[in-house]
Length: 448
Ligand code: ATP
Ligand code: MG
Image 1: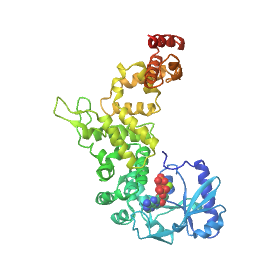
Image 2: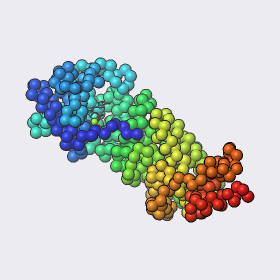
Image 3: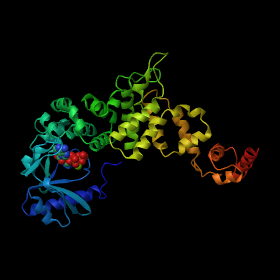
Image 4: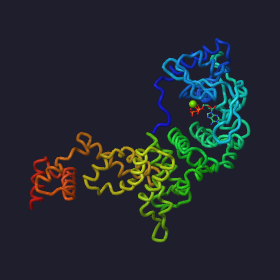
């Protein structure tokens, strides 16, 4: 469920490779800079994920200078150059024109660095660095000032920039949350005003942006509240938005409404992964439609099952892979089982701990406690049980097979299945020390 394949090169190798590409182009007299996210990250003291290069050289020239170049985005002036085990993106300085689909320019014309800066989304992403001049920064848009102020601000007129490309609405929130910056007020206003257009963004892009926002932000809960505040949550995930204002019984949830509870959990995620983040985000999505407040207290009967169905709808809508959907939905559906852990049969506990979803379910439960009453009793029981099971398979191969049961005279059919389950249950409960004693008991049960 990763959004991009990891670059096998180390950051040092990527930097050296990108520098070599710049040198070759500059040696031919072409103005060539590091551009965009890598410059931003270097100035912030973060290690860039990759190094993008912007150059005056036309795509054909770039291609000619680097053997093995791949020109997937040639109409946009983008050439992928293999260098030192890495692939470096080299883009010709350009201006973008006309965005009729709300996502891509209709046409690009090649230009110079000053013009190229204007087509970029945010000022902090529109900086250039001249590596041949000791990393001199070329800044046409006051991006350095915004980095210092820790602000995400559109290049140019915000409403126009969001109208060109609706994905920028989500990118703005992602950069603000991941970098722990503020949205510039005019940029935030334009997001609010244009929020409805985010529904036009391809589902896969929405999925990837939201996933990155949730997994790369140190405080993913604040990112969630920011998405709500600028109106994007209501557009993209109305089911999650509905958790806002859904009250909870204060004796179990002193923290507040369901959205606040979820945000608190997201803020405390430590070993984050896309599956954990989405499980946390959606675990209580069944609460708004199941809430009743006409008895002794507010209740949400059946909310894990209802939530599982809603989660499945949301994840399908966002085109998640089926195995991700199954995994996350299982976590949502199962998240209240932890309540009965102290009284759980050994076999049930073993099935729970042995499930592939268990590590995420355990973390979800820990966060659920931390985001509400803070009582970790059941979490501690689960951890202790998992530890106690460390030296034996939690879900061992069954001692008794269907063939064994039929050998006792049970005809093929449903009865075999039910005896099988009973035998495995007994095995998981550790009611018999070995196969022989289980077999003797079973023979007696079946043969009467
Ligand atoms: P990250 O890779 O961490 O998401 P980044 O800034 O490198 O951050 P990319 O998507 O890799 O982002 O894009 C590289 C650069 O291209 C950006 O820094 C920005 O200058 C420009 N850019 C990317 N997407 C857009 C867009 N939708 N609109 C305008 N400019 C964009
Ligand atoms: Mg990048």
